[in-house]
Image (cartoon, rainbow over all chains, first blue to last red; front, side, top):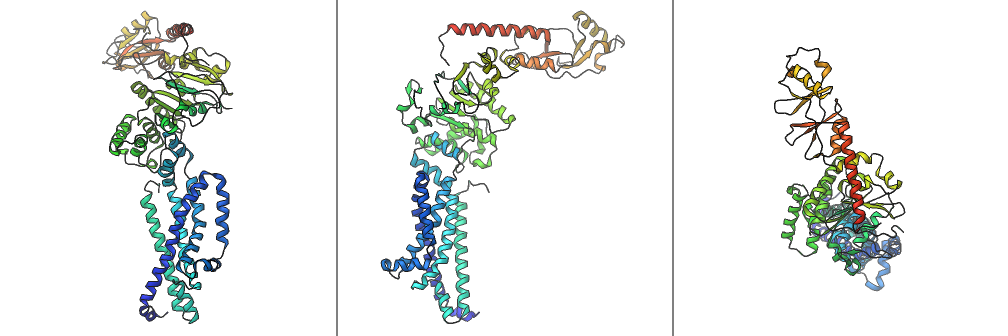
Length: 209
Length: 374
């Protein structure tokens, strides 16, 4: 472990960490935005649910590197390439979670809402989505952590992130770089997770603890 | 086919209880009223208007709905749960919340519960909030689907009492579904008893259901002790109570024995200085004692419980007689002072007289245009 390397390269490490956070958080949030309407559709029209779940499962089976490479003709060696790929992966986690979240709303609650005179859209926005929030945020936690971790693979197509430290450390046989990259990815993932746990608590004061 | 050939009219301001075995269609009937279920044929009229002419959401906001599992919104505070329909109707939040607090008091809950979440409440409290929520927009009609089935028997009894009390105040048109005939008889102005096939067996006032079941299905459903339960519909006010032998505890053995002899009764009721019952004394226990022994010094038998003449029913009087060592019920006034005694024989005469009135009333009802047909 060479501490002097860390202090000399502080600004590089900081920049790579920010880039990794960006590549991790943005796809998860876009995934959230896309998966909510998809999940709502699947929860409402049941026939839509099996094909949707099968589709996201197939996507999840694609190795991340293969997906990055497959997107090169369309998106080149860019941040966008990695963000699109990671968004697709986060859909694989988010869509089933949104469906599960909406299905977790107790039938009597749904029935009471209808009987009180809620219209369909109002019931979705006012009752069902708020009650699905804990499960949806649970999915978001997994999606963010997995995006942060997968972002480092993007280094192989030249999109920089903390993954740079792994490849450079390997090529130079310099373990310090690898350790630093690993620790920072874990710390970053934990930090994002903590933020989301805080968000869930703030958004769902009604959940019995 | 859950419900078939049903013809039922619920008079405004009354409580109609739909009761029957599970699967008989009572809940389906209820849900047809607010269009949670659409009938394949026939009509549901609300105030003379077919419910299918109304927009479902609008219709439902004018009909309170209470269900067994409460269906409270876990993510809303108690006050916002109660304010649901007013908020849907576009009331300002402040006004809706003020209304919610009023309703909390109306259903017997502490307004301090307003900012709590449902999970912080007991089952009985949640059910009361459910009732308050149904009443929030002051709908003329209230539908209740097994509202008290999920709470323990003690709480259930108090919720039933509360409903009866609320009804005397609010006079809503209530349709309540239950599988519990006791509940039906307790809270219903009218009871509609279903057969397992979804047809109506009998629609009647509770005392007529108990007193004049139309067939063996009804009498079996109502239960073997329907005679005793029928007694709860007869007031104790008209009873002829005996004034003897009742003796104050400051009196003597000689006077007590004299009173017992005059009345021809083996038991003497001893009262305290306020005229409240103190206990029963058997004449045979007094006989060996000196004539001037004060009664207050003789240990008396416990008197069990009493019935209040002005407010209790014959059922309470019978119960008091059953549990009395003397086989006699003690009637008291509202202050707890002894009003008189009642023996089994007197009770039997009173019950026979009361039953005769029921039969007469039933005879009269045949003449009236019947608002309810089965």
